[in-house]
Length: 398
Ligand code: SF4
Image 1: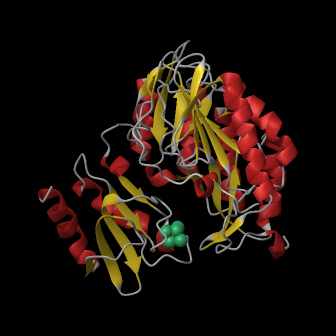
Image 2: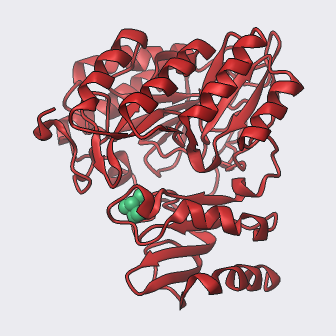
C-alpha cells in the first residue's frame, strides 16, 4: 500500500475507510460502514477471521455502530480490502444514521428509512464537496436513542407525519416529511458550497432558547439515555437482544465463538447498533450467557457501561496511559449515576463532553478533572495508586 493513501493521525476532519485506513499507534485502522447495518453470523465469523489474519485481531463496534479493524499493515491492508469488498456491501458518501430497528420498532413514532433514502439520493450530487465528517441523523424516536450521536442535521420524529429538524445546535423547527427532506438537502447544499471544512454547528451555534411549543406539544429535549447492553427489545415480529463490546472492542477469537453460537442456534441476523452494540435477533438466554462468559456486556447495569475509554497507549501514538486497561481495573469502583472517562491524552476522543470524573494521561502523570472534559485543567495529578481512592472520594462527595 502506498502510504500516501493512509490518513495520518493528525489530519483534521478525516475519517478512516476501507480503502483509506488511518495510521494509529497499533498500525492501520479501517472502518467499514456495512450497508443496512446488518450482517449474518457467517459474515461476522468471516470478518473476525480477516481481522486475525490481516490485522492484530481486534475488532471494534464504534459509538455510531460501524465496524473497525485494527493493526493492519501497509502490506496486509490491500489484502484485507480485497477480501472485505468481496463479502460486504459497504456504504460510501454522506453519513446518515438511523436506528437499526427502524421500520420494525413498535415503539417508534415514524419510520426513518424513507427520509434517509431520499436524503441519501438527493445528496449524491454533493459527493466530494461535503466534509467527510458531515452527518445527518434521522431519529425515529423509538427504542434506540440516537441523541448521543453528533450530527450536523438532526431530524427527530414527533409523530407519524412531523419531524423536529435541528441544524447544528440551533433551534429546532417542525416540518412534515417532505419539508424536512427539502430543508436538509438545502442545508447540505449550503455546506457543500462553503467547502469541505463547513459544519452546520459553525453556522448554527448553541442557542439558549426554551423548547418550542407547537400544536404537536413541546419538542422533547434530546435526552441522552444511557447506552445499554443486554437489553431485549421488541420488534414488530419477534425480539432482538443487545450485546455490547466492552469499551467498543473485542478480540476476533471471542467474536468467532459468539458468531458460531448464534449460527448453531439458528439465528440469521445481527444488527450493528450505536453505543458499541451488536443486536442479535431472536437471541436465547443461553446465547446471552455464552456472551457473558466471553466477556461481552450483557446487563444494563454492567459498570463498564458507565465508563468511556479510548484505546490509549495500547493503540494510539498520542496515548500516555493504557486507558482501557485502567478502565477495566476501575470499573467495579464506579457507582450507578457516575460517568467516568479515562482518556489516553487531552484530546478526549472517547467522550468529547464533560463527565463526573475524567482521568487524563499526561507526560507527568494522570490528570484528575472533576465535572469537565479531558482537555480541561486537572485539579490534581495522580499516579496509578491514587486512581481508586480518587474515584471513590468523588462518588462519596456527590
Ligand atoms: S484521546 Fe485516546 S485515542 Fe484520542 S488521541 Fe488521545 S490517546 Fe489517542
